[in-house]
Amino acid sequence: MFRRLVISFVAMATATLGVTGTSSAAARTPVPAGPTTLQLPDGFHPDGIAICRQEHRAYFGSLNDGAVYRVDLSTGQGDLLTPGTGGMATGMKLGEGHKLYVAGGSVGDGRIVDSVSGKVLADYKLSATAGFINDVVLTKDAAWFTDSFNPVLYKLPLHADGSLPAQSELVTLPLTGDLQYLDGFNVSGIAPTPDGKSLLIAQINTGKLFEVNTASGATHAVDTGSETLTNPDGMLLVDHTLYVAENRKNEVASLKIDDAGLRGDVVQRTTDPRFDIPTRIAADGDLLYLPNARTTTTPTPTTPYTAVAIPKP
Image 1 (spheres, rainbow, N blue to C red):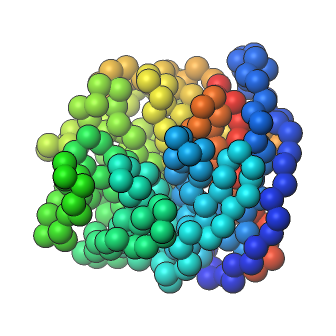
Image 2 (cartoon, rainbow, N blue to C red):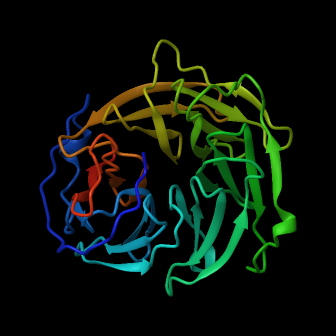
């Protein structure tokens, strides 16, 4: 599904918001000064996104070759932070000390990149067998990576002094309990629970969410009542609201999550005419930003790609 493409650059342009939803909250949110449609390089094939809120910068990862593209959210102008490495850059998170944590997709690795210089600071082999390292989340003491093909999470410790962990510090946590891996892509997105004691993961091929005990690996299905999710991919937790990108449905589902992450009520679904398989979610102020992976469009070196901003539902 993912083809290696040649990256070329295009000028940045702006567009207006076009959000629909089930409440009037979007209409009350002021339109930002910066563009709400970000033009990414032709052929880039984005998937991951991370945002530095202090600098209003976004970082986008490519499925083609692991390149990272940096965009000023105030102007929409961007530049290539890291060239292609021959791998992938799927889920991403920005941590302390300008460290950008990057999930490596089918290469089976996790990287730490300097978000200022673009230098790869460390590259960890995560999967011992064929895997797909899909997403990453940062907690107070670790970076956690998901694997879509193997029922495990990978844990890299975060050192208080800012030093990088050694490969030998990697912990592989087997997942047990309610979650059962099936054929195809399984776990994709990952987020913390509101109380910070556990993690939430999304199983893309079943549409289910699960709470994970980070000590034991035991999983419990999240009770979403009569609501179901379709292709839940990237997730973002803001207070007690969990935003879920339902990629092929071209929607963002907003769920109210209890402290322990065992109950989630879908309170709103938001779509936008600019959505074209949005995969991940990051926030800056009152806006959510989502890259369009366009996985139902045959990729070419000249295929245009965008990321779009919508008001927080």
